[in-house]
Amino acid sequence: MNIGEAAKLTGLSDKTLRYYESIGLVSAKRSSNGYRLYTDKQIDELHFLASARQTGFTLDECKALLALLRDTNRHSRDVKAFVTDKLTKLDSQIAALSKMKQSLEQLSSRCNDNDDSQCAIIEGLSSNTLCSKEENNE
Image (cartoon, rainbow, N blue to C red; front, side, top):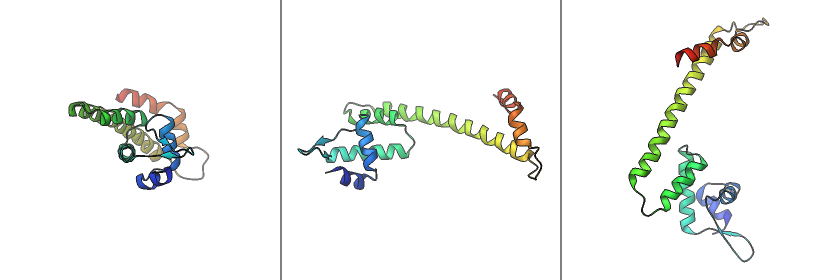
């Protein structure tokens, strides 16, 4: 199947398929005229990659997941450990985002929201008080 058909079938763009090939995630055979040709197995791998990306895995993580997919001797505990590690990282990101949100809410609540040039948000960002408070909370 050519790249256009593969793109339609997987929901990935032609550009994405070319990029995935350039970084070694998938490799397409070439026809005699140089067009990329994808097998059913490669289409399955592209579906797998699309699902992994939608779940939040990075391209490097997808490369590791593909290796696990292709490894017929893999152990489910290895896959579970991989996902558990991702969950731990995600929890850390959520905590960091929560702190950012709290800081922004504090800044926003200080704002008088009027035509004055004095701005509590600018002052708050300039004063380093947010950094000090965040460092004390850690």
